Length: 106
Image 1 (cartoon, one colour):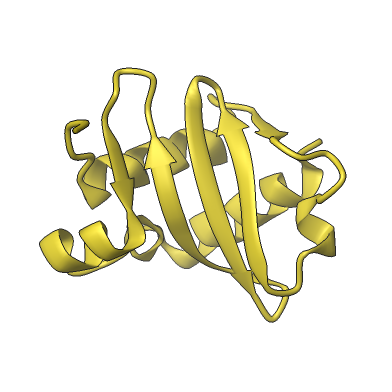
Image 2 (cartoon, rainbow, N blue to C red):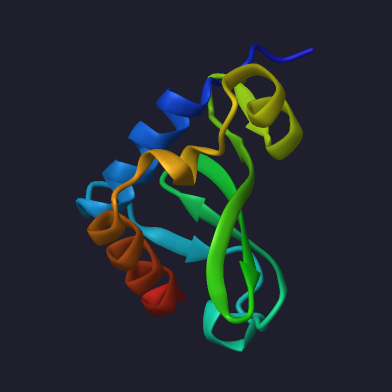
């Protein structure tokens, strides 16, 4: 089993995306963020794999994240162990910028 990725460390990676330090690349170019009203959108963020979830065509939460070093986290794990989702640790401006970067991902 892989080592656990705490929500705070996952949020730090999301901030790297927001800051432009990690580019986003869709894992399925036929399903861009702008076409997802409800559902998952898997992306690559540098060497990390991240799955975002949209609800009502808006960013709702992070489903899962796996890093190249083998650590990973997922929705239920974060809620059980950290009490929140990594996305909850971002402020409103960071969330808006993250969604903007998802819209631009190809």
